[in-house]
Length: 81
Image (tube, rainbow, N blue to C red; front, side, top):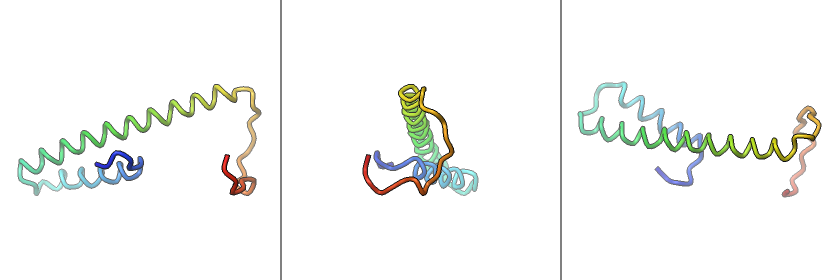
């Protein structure tokens, strides 16, 4: 697993491993290796979700007085923040 891969890539890899394990066609040693990798991927996904949740909490705290309004993607320009 590459450290900088995104959440979606992690989930895709995890789904692939689950499919391999569910097939029942892997030798025990390969199944154990896949299971170990699956655990690592699941932990990485959990960490990424926790980090995203923390970022959302920080953003909400910083702008708790900001009025909510409907999101309109046409209002976004290409300038960096």
